[in-house]
Structures are given as structure tokens and as C-alpha cells.
Amino acid sequence: MQIDWHSPRKQFLFQLGLAVILAALLAMRQEGFLFGGVLLGGTIASVATFCFYCQAFSGLKSEVFTPEEAARMFLLRCYRAEVFKILLSVLTLLIVFKYVDDKTFRTSVLLGYVVISVVGSLTNSYFFNTQETLH
Image 1 (spheres, rainbow, N blue to C red):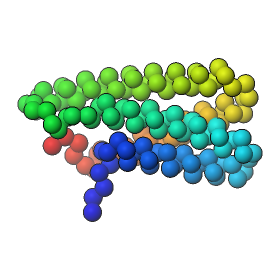
Image 2: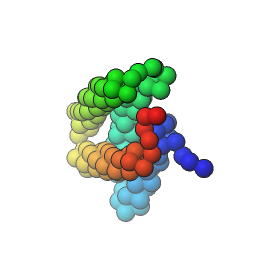
Image 3: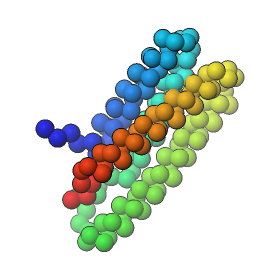
């Protein structure tokens, strides 16, 4: 049985589940307030990554391209989706930092965002290197 890791929904659920586990582990060592911050940061990273996958991989297999056109189209979609992902992440984090005054909560949001983003990037690069992306 092979898992389709290219599915945006599965990547989103994996990263969100990882955010919940990380938040629960940190909450056992600290206050419950830290749980909410790490979970919020992980959710921001997960939603941004989900939007990236939806934009980058939507409709690639249904369109008829030559191999050169498919590669160019895929790169263009990835670049656009990455710019949107960065803008979405920055704007969401700015909103959180603007309206929340507690520095501990801000730090936990940033911690959750960074950890989920890094772990998500590592797992994505592993799964994309082991499976074919475009057929």
C-alpha cells in the first residue's frame, strides 16, 4: 500500500497533527497558555502549506502539455504558490503579533510556526524525492 503524500489534505492533516502533539508536549512542561500559542503557530504553518499545495498541484495532470511545457508550468505554479504562502504566513503572524501583547504567547506562536514549517519541509522533500511528482 502506497500513501499519496502529494495530496494537500494528507499533508495538512499530518502537519496539524504534529502541531497538536508538539503543543501537548510543551503544555505538559509549561502552562496551558503555551499550548494555544504553539497550536496557533502550527495551524498558521499548516494552512499556508495547504494553500501552497492546492495552488501548485491543482490541475497539473488534467492538462495536456509537452514535457517542456509541463515543467515550465509546474515551476511557475510553484513560484506563485510560494509567494502566496509567504504573504499569507507573514500577514497572519503580523495580525497575531499586533493584537497579542503577551511575549510568551508570541514566542510560542513563532516556535510552533517554525517547527511545523521545518518539519513539513523536511518530510515533503523526503517524500518528493522518493516518489514521482509528475507522470
